[in-house]
Length: 234
Image (spheres, rainbow, N blue to C red):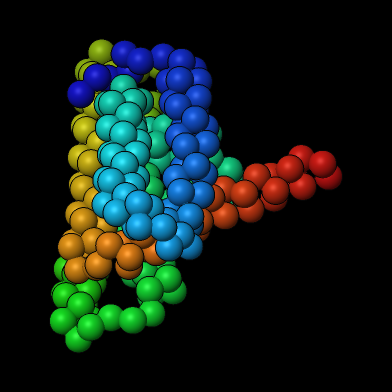
């Protein structure tokens, strides 16, 4: 893992620009998903499969860019400056909590077969278990952060012997490695939960779920921007 090699300001600027462009494409995909649900045109119906793959590739692109930047400055992704205050408050290990997907699913798709209900319940149990384990791992990282010898060094008037400086560097490096592993594991869980759910859904159900997910994400973004603007105006 790169350790501070990437300039923080350049990563914030570059990934922030990518993220804003990604959101624009997200809005366009939402429009296409909604249109695919409304249209009775046979050509549009046949295109649903291609559209689903394009949307999933859109999310894969975000994950790939995120992890590439996180390898340079992982700390940024635990409190990303390109997100609003409201979005940051919803973060769980650098992203959304996987369990929110089940709420989005049940609010967007109302009719399931008994087999689908059983499959979704299995995925829910697996996700809950892995989410709990990652929450515990994240708590351990927070404890490690608090246990860094930094405060002890500061209390010594900012002076440290070589051994203490090496100890601090080693502790910080390990902490970043742990944070990157946790972020990667959380992103894998987010992605695997989506894939498992999609395996249980029909094409129409999948389009409904993807449209609702995009709508939720964009609504959270819009609300966060509005609240930040209101605070800045006061």
